[in-house]
Length: 262
Ligand SMILES: NC(=O)c1ccc[n+]([C@@H]2O[C@H](COP(=O)([O-])OP(=O)(O)OC[C@H]3O[C@@H](n4cnc5c(N)ncnc54)[C@H](O)[C@@H]3O)[C@@H](O)[C@H]2O)c1
Image (cartoon, rainbow, N blue to C red):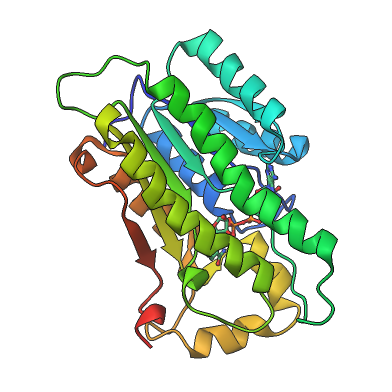
């Protein structure tokens, strides 16, 4: 796939654990897009993490720079999008991966955690997608072709309940519905909005889960017999971002080794 001339913003694309062999999904997407020729704006709220990904891209011959911002802070996001537009005039691609999760039991879940998770994971998604769509809407495109592609990250737990992730799963249910709402609103402008719903993927986010032994239990429930890799999720994103996917919009696509079948 050729993404030369494309300008991409990938949120949550930092390597959050220095020296880790595990890539987050955002980092894997950024590396794949850069390898295919796109100019990458690497967003993370952790400046060191964002810089680590930028260095990896540049060392592999790609082009990237970091844009540090908290996706749930609308002013920071508008400033980020303004900066990209000022430099490159257009934004062709948004892949929104930034999210947080904290394990908690039902009766310990405090209001401030609930609000923080919904703010970062759901409002943050809305903020970034809306700010980028506003730019995409004004862009030229060949007749009937896509003006811009947005891929959001939800979860198979948007509709599959589990114990201990009340705030995170409720936010992801919101992200899946927001995907459909945005796709409907933006289809007349030929802006694609789709979501990827991963099952259990080996990323730094899951190292935290590993400490509770949750991973081993999770693997037993996966028909394919293993967790997914960030790169496998990135490859799906690459297809959704390609010219071949112009007619796909409003889809929420699972990638889970069959986990959602059982
Ligand atoms: N890993 C999985 O198994 C899994 C499963 C289902 C869904 N997902 C979703 O995929 C996406 C990526 O997950 P991951 O496992 O790669 O996560 P990760 O924790 O490895 O990476 C997320 C990155 O986002 C950054 N971030 C968090 N909040 C931010 C904010 N408010 N502003 C800017 N940056 C922020 C973090 O610093 C981190 O670098 C998330 O939306 C996650 O919910 C992951």
